[in-house]
Length: 254
Image (cartoon, rainbow, N blue to C red):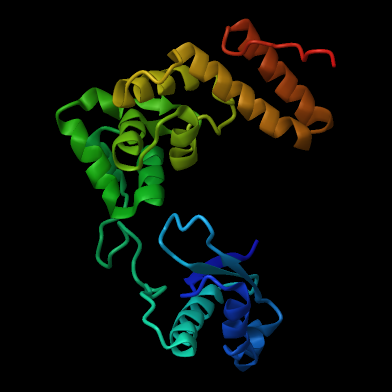
């Protein structure tokens, strides 16, 4: 799959935005010319205050750095307006040069598995230590909430507090909770309890929230499964039903 770069176009007019694209001279990047596709999209909702967006996708491996830098600068010249840009080589949050990385000694120091620590660093970089830091006062939060993906309870709480997660699905997208082999069988209910504790009651009990989450996971996988894989998923579904983690609702007749 290709990478994606978004560049703000200071105009709400799609034709003007397309004209700006035509003045960029992508032929000057012959390696990328056949891989770059551009679409100008007026931002009608103005949700982010941007009067227009250009979405650039490319499939040349590693080329997105050149594309994003070139397009941002070219748009600024083409429109003669100031466009705030972030150099593509700017470290992501938690990825500053010299930041420490995971190690067996660090995992032992915090009393967690190396697998859990590696996952934390993969998702948060050096900010993994911030996630763990809160457990000095609450060491029980170092417990593995999701055994399949080795995700700790403290990361689920951090997702709610720092990343705006408000449901199990939100937490799953930010951490991977429930995406392992058990399909949420062992972790969805506990995740729902943690989310409820962090964000407060949201209309669903932990059981109801976990039922909806695990059912959605199965519905998302089922269309892509066949033969032995589908059989395994059906067995897993049966186990979840037997454990009371999923309710089977028959479709209404039309």
